[in-house]
Image 1 (cartoon, helix red, strand yellow):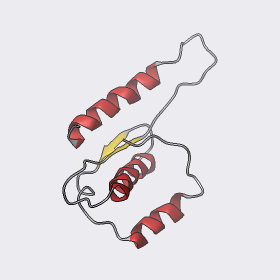
Image 2 (cartoon, helix red, strand yellow):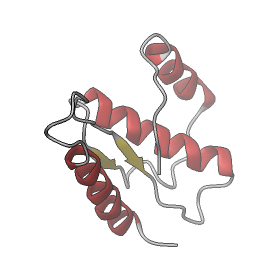
Image 3 (cartoon, rainbow, N blue to C red):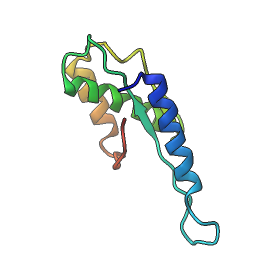
Length: 102
């Protein structure tokens, strides 16, 4: 129930808290997280398209060095052709890990 900018700020706060979470005396490595944010607008015609927008923003975070938040307003509201989505999936299928997308 918020705009993309506010969601990106909240995701950044979560990312920072995750990085600070481990106890320095612990053997656990520091945690990192990548987030993708997409705002739902009237031009997005389905839940799947909205999730695709967030997923593409998530991949942008990963491709730009990981451990960051990407909010791609230029993706939101644009109909994504299935061919583009398949290409994104194909390109990242080998390195795909469990991720959180907002």
